[in-house]
Image 1 (tube, rainbow over the protein chains, first blue to last red):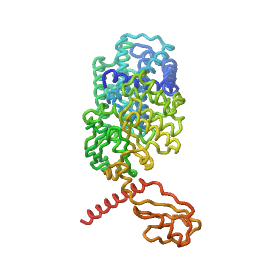
Image 2: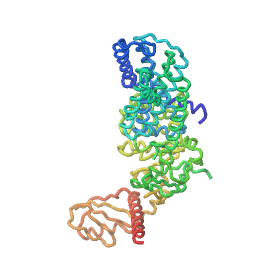
Image 3: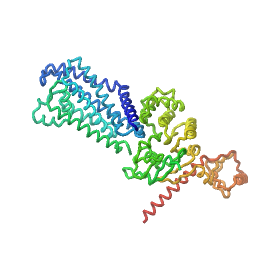
Image 4: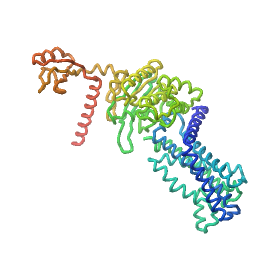
Length: 257
Length: 320
């Protein structure tokens, strides 16, 4: 394929993915918006007013970046996991496999589609948060950069999950038993400085902690961990997981007999 | 000499569980041919076509599509290939038009190029009126035609159809045959199909390959294959029922039911002798017809012979 044909193929797949999740918006865009609104009302407003300050900020201001990041992570991941797995299940993945489209375009198309939903939901949650607090962004470029990287990383993760999944249960195990606990324990609702030193050390093994903290640093200018180190770790994860997903696709893992 | 549309050499496929689906098959399909790949279930037809369209990974062997080795430049080879699989493999929730336009996009066709082509194909296949409807609302026959339209969007030189008319009613099957004949004749598209309807192969195809137990047992023209057929079975409807099979010298006779006889007539034998003998025995024939289908008889006999040879081979191995 020449570069123009490759670009058309990539756009076709991204457009198809965006069309898919916007067509079923009551399942994809509405629920996270309602859930996050509940978090803002209950944790931020009702309980948060009794908690007081966290790292020098009101509790509402503290949890806004974490909740936005949580929405981006779960939606980027689940979009690709469910969409790619459905394509496998309905065998419509064969439409792509018989075409001359390179494997990296297939991977990039699904990942960009997942990022679009993750970032779209992130924007919706940000807009909802404006009803509860005034948002000031200390480092706008860094904020955008880290949220895009995070969406990419978890979209790739969702792709690998779908590639390996054999039944629908397989694509809900990772989000339920790994992603959700790691997100809740990743500093969305609290600063790890509140934890005893042992649990602080354990928390440092949680990759989501780094993303939430860098994102919060972009908003508030405070972080529990060094920002440069965290960004490097996220970039390294993206490179390694993208390479792994591409290698699995080339080998036909989970899609070719 | 022109490159064959498809050239397969020593193609082997061993699945993860150790099952050897293809045992080093060789096959050539000429450019512009209408070729049928026949075989019983599990013979290796779909595996062979799966390798050609990249849905199955081969274990060994070489596949060339219009001279392009798929191991060297599969992407280039895929431009020449359109695939209509056995089972519906599109997103049932998408619109008909979106399905064909997306497929064109995967081949690098812009929407501007793809729209007129989509209109042409969907109109030809009587689907244009359904273009804005969800694919799941289509009937089974319409879904099959949608897959044909989708496969032809990028104007492939070779079309592979895996059991294209399975579950399709007779009228629709005939109209699909006519369409396939037309694109083969007018556009020169090479067509390879697998089918269980041997009448389909006899009616449509010029050449035929018979595959059984992962091996090509015959690769010849339909005409030559039929010329080899030296027996024909006739079904005779009788005026009155019989209790036992009448004896006709030199002919193989059996009762299909009490009022119908099946008589096998070899080349050189005369039907007059059958009627004369039956007349002498006081048996009256009301009507007669040729048992369909000639190719099917030959196919069944070939497959049975192949299976018998294989069973004998296994028995010899076991006793050794």
